[in-house]
Image (tube, rainbow, N blue to C red; front, side):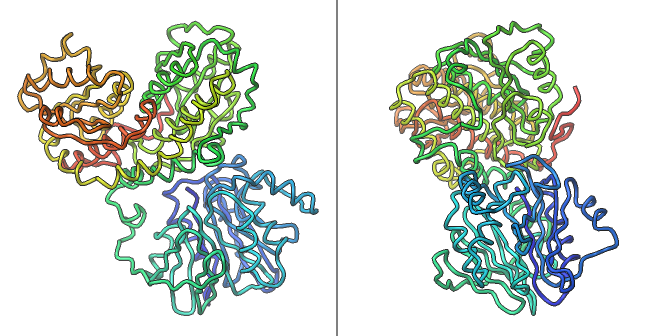
Length: 609
């Protein structure tokens, strides 16, 4: 997500901050800013919407001098991209400046309380409450003030604070968002990611969750959030600069696959409360009467987002008992769709700039239909033009092949389904059971990712072929379509997804001895049927790699490879099922020597028709 850089030492801070921020540009951002302590002018804060180059233009030749400072590149969450919403944020007296990655869930209640105490706010961000809290609790010690502040907040944070009252010191803290301290001689660095500091030091402390640090030019002292001193081991970075951008992974795609548990936690944060027992989608302002009155839903999207919509269709029809159509955005407006007056249109776009999806959105609105957008980018065209928006907090995706955006889109659709179900009078106990299962998903995804080596072995077989098939029934068919897309777009292997029950209607003619067939069998209601279809493929010589929930020794004897997934409710299995398929596609592409992050002929965001 956002980028953080901090410096305290004997050199001029501004060029070091700018250098570090530029090393973090790959993470994606919409605004940038710096704050420095200058002996003649006190705390000097400059920030700007847009690229770092715009920030440099704004500063011009009047470059601030000072040997301690903080910098930030922002990816908008709360508050659209603007100069006011850019970091660093400051408090009323402008004697404290703070940068922050993460999401503060209870910022609205804190903001109301602080305003009652006389604090004045200048942005729409959740971050600004942190700066005001530090100011409120400051009593001569910045470390204690920040400790008091973070104990008031709920959510995730990596943050650094600077004060002109203690101008040779930076205080930082971390919870659920990365932060690293670079160790130098007579100088020290703070960053959200390794590339920002690698040209100056390879000796680091990596802060763990619920730790904070007091950083001066000559010392770094790490504490727990309760104030206990922590002994830290120096971590020597051996990666080169390119590897560092990827967090030590070989490709951005693998890094983003591994980030999925975090992306899920960020997307459910503030929405799944009490460990999933409560669903809070107040951001939608969707009245009970409106939700109960919906008679049909259209889901419109492209590519991976379209596949997410297919999963959403199954879930919404099952829970809401109203018809749901899923349309490719590139076809939607050309077939003159029948949009009734009680029809809700949901558009899904990772970038929020997908040309066909925008056109579909505009068609729906021109006919007077309400449009709900699911997107990852605040301030994007889709977000601005839709009637209502739910953001997926996946963070930027660098790899062309979408992974964490897909998972967060699925999670968002599930939460939306449960939110609508609660407004349509569905039994609360059922909704709570589903919400609690959703809440457990990040940990279950981590358990799947820990078994990466099993997938690597399967990939070595698949990589030898020029064609493969994915089969499944019900929700497994929807996930099979996404698995096939991932394989074809990065490994250049022809991959097709079929509903298992359709095999006899032509597809079996293509099954030859040894051809890889990826069989998904996670849906208990159709498990027996799925197993019968798998046996049909195996009888004709296919090499079957099977993914399912529960151990089945009889099936083990029928297939070539089997991967057991953690058990959860059937309707949310797609989030778990797709993860090994992503890994299979990735490792197959690596085995074949393909350019994983930049497959031929493809672009990350399709902004033309």
